[in-house]
Amino acid sequence: MVVASGTLFAVNGTVSKLVLRAGVEPPQLAFIRAAGAFAGLLVVMLLLGRGRRLAVTRHDLPLLIGYGLAGFFLVPMLYFVAISRLPVGIGLLFEYTAPLFVALWMRFGQRERVRPRLWGGLALSLAGLACVAEVWGELSLDGLGVLAGLAASVGLAIYYLLGARGVARRDTLSLTTWAFGAAAMAGLLVQAVAPSRGGWAPLAESTSAGVPVALLCVYVVVLGSIAPYLLVGAALWHLPATSVGIIGMIEPVIASAVAWITLGESEALNAAQLAGGALVLAGVALAETARVRPPEPETAAAEEKPVAVPTG
View (tube, rainbow, N blue to C red):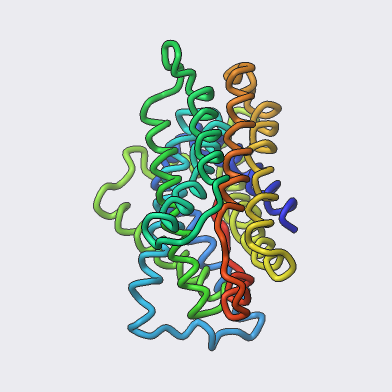
């Protein structure tokens, strides 16, 4: 299930880039994704007879709003900005440094014990990002794209931290549904305050290959959001979150391969950048396993609760 969700998320990166190339702007696509996923998950919950779990108290609102804004609107929008200016695989690599920020926060913000491998993971990832950006020469990557990717990683780290609190209060499906709802409201406000220059006309057009843009948006919503989120949530009932996170790192690899075949982005990746990508993934894997978790049954049980993982 993790491999399947990673594959769907990875393909979603290329599909999203095709939508962006057709003229849809990142805030628009983030809104389409959030609104569509919210409606779809709402239908899923009602069909499963879990409508009562959608009940929200005033105490829940700050978490749901912050969780939705950070992980379900800002992260996708920043990711769309990144991949509109960078190769899909490289944009994902920058976003995938989020576990490093989480581990650093747990060490210095929460004063949790960590294994020494955290520092090795941090060093590997920083070295890998330096290789990806080719800092030793003229920077070949778009600066705004890099900043958007790093900002997405910070937002994703915030999402992880808020998600850990969220699953302690309510089930994953209702939490994810309302988070997408909050993201959809944020997207609606953005469109009202700063409407896109090209309007919604690109949705009625087709790509250079003749694929309707609206059909690609359906993929972004159904197979790029709803299905992989449900797969990750289901997988977390069978595997610990750390294992899911590490296995999920196949996404940048698959995303690069799909973009290579579909978008011809292989020319942007040289040997140093490929090696850098491998170092980033290795560093994140070390960071994912660096936290020392207490052995109490209650904590262990809490860590097994599903947390939806937003990626491409």
